[in-house]
Length: 309
Image 1 (cartoon, rainbow, N blue to C red):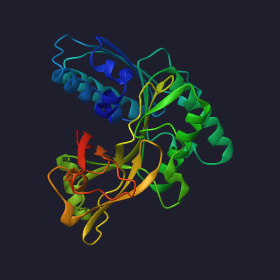
Image 2: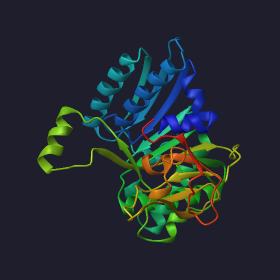
Image 3: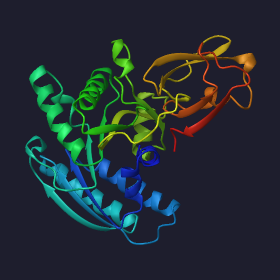
Image 4: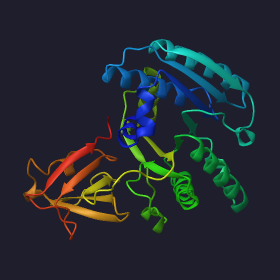
């Protein structure tokens, strides 16, 4: 998620270059989100050849004391691993009654889904998150379940309608989410991950065969969207559907339309093969973008962002 956000937003890209970063983690839990961010930060700075030491100030809000203790252990280990100087503040309180201080990034993972139930709670949560999104770049991560993801999609539309911030990812546009039209649809991601030994053992016991991590997310940045959308750019929002004689996939286009695109097996070429092989969640450019949603043998399909990056 941070790689894509940094690629598509200056507000996120600056995080990898800064010498001092202020992060607020709301509903921080045991530190998974902050640890993931720190791991990305170290790798991103290394790729860019940034050798200067970085100072990371983390303000974590977590109501549960045992989780807060685990958070501190995780955050300090992650900061040490990337050679960062860490300043850590942990508050045991309800983040709903917390106003983030000036910062460069707000994180919130698996903490909003229970608040988006019921009209009154939903209105309060929208106003709260809108305040965060106007305050600093924001990443919200939720479980890839239909109810929780559709609630996040509705929150996304409300934030766009309120203004003051724009969607960085996963959307390529600021129009209403097209996947909300059908109750059976929900926009979630799949990433291939290397499981820890404990997770691998659990997967073996329960017979899990898909080694991908599933989640839904929303990333925003303050202000209006500075990007110029290209109509040829789409996000692959499904795996190949297993259609006979062709590859079919739903794509979310930069013009805000959800379309079912297809590529016949007999017309697969090196230039368009990425439509078949790219992972769910990848952003690709299709030129020319066919008006009938059928990708021809001479079309060029190039990856702009690979989901595994």
